[in-house]
Length: 296
Image 1 (cartoon, rainbow, N blue to C red):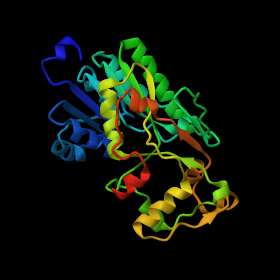
Image 2: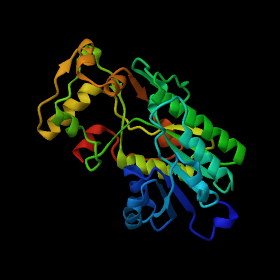
Image 3: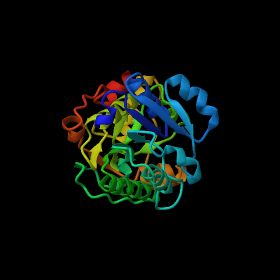
Image 4: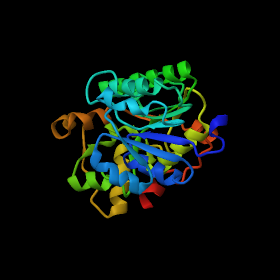
């Protein structure tokens, strides 16, 4: 925090204030002045009630972002990239707006572990070179590159959180029971892939920790300690929910029963090492394994 902000609450702009962003609001309410960018004017009431001042603007329409210049000391960027292409124009538009008045001194970006592509089940830390296999991953790599450049050019500390699958019992679309209820199959054991997870509450706490302690232009795996294959994860969830375990199918069958998005997730296997999360951000996970998180 610089001298001008020592005697007042710092201001945080949350870009993409969905489920995780609102969890961050609950953690920081009363300690930070909180702003939330939204493209939907109907969300203003919800955001105010949560404790954030809404700012209406659209990352796809740069002219609507002019008011972001100079409004915040820090930015939490959780907005997804566009749905197509290999570059992230939304992050580009956000940084252009912030650069008009370079007040921001800290940026935390919610990226994805998908930037690594398929790692054949390898266990690795943040020094591994990204190798995205999809445009979805390439857009995130592009966003990370732009943010790192901004940090170096304007003296902002940028933390890149590479995030795996997010889950929580109260998160819409974020609990395996919904997929189990649809009867979606999983891969047979011989074809299965390692998958990584983080509870939404722990992710919100990781965002706050990165705002406080993140090192400049640093990548951190925002992942829990679990090492589990995807099918075993859904078996565990089914047992805890008292639901039938999902069918196991061979990879050759999967293309007939799964969407291209599901197939892409089932084609990538990796195990994330999270030492930086614990050592540098000093985060003690509330739910260090999915066993504990799903029970909670």
